[in-house]
Length: 199
Ligand code: ITT
Ligand code: NA
Image (cartoon, rainbow, N blue to C red; front, side, top):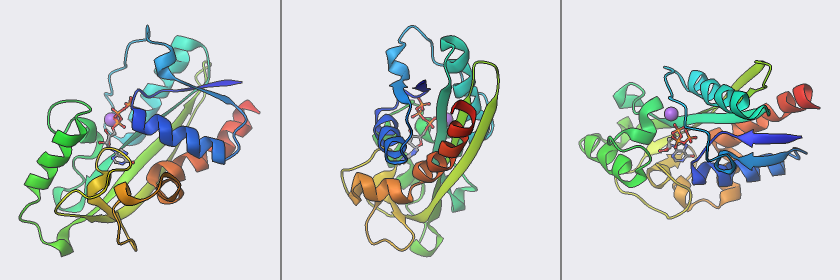
């Protein structure tokens, strides 16, 4: 069976292919960019889970194929969970990772290390063309650096240092990040659900 990945974020697609292949998922994974004629859906939900389901349903309806999506972001303790679902457009420009990261660092410039707790969150959703839906979540706890470090990953990876690590997510190898990440946890939890519903 074909399974559509409802994302146009290149960093996510790379991670999701590796995570789902490592989990032994037997389905052929196709990125949403294989369907350029399908417009992006508005993420109108107020939670990661709602947005992941909105994206998965929209693509399942448009293609008639089972679709998986994630909605994810960085939740900063001292900002009461912001940027949260607004992580991809925190600076005002959707997908400008560098501007988003730099704005957040500026907003936190006076915050001392002991108060720089944060976590990545990921909701992973599966939607079938008949409307069946499932959603699961994963988290990665850590602290925020004052300066970006490392060149791997994407988004806020250069400033998030996972709990128990001395490196940022952007200094981990892809395998190391996927083993502990919010996205890795969420999609590994989704794999048995895909097997149950799709065989
Ligand atoms: P799609 O909706 O097409 O999937 P998007 O980039 O808009 O792409 P989201 O709405 O889920 O996706 O926003 C996720 C943002 O959260 C992303 O742009 C990053 O800034 C941040 N983020 C999520 N996961 C991350 C990770 O593993 N490492 C670093 N930053 C991450
Ligand atoms: Na989002």
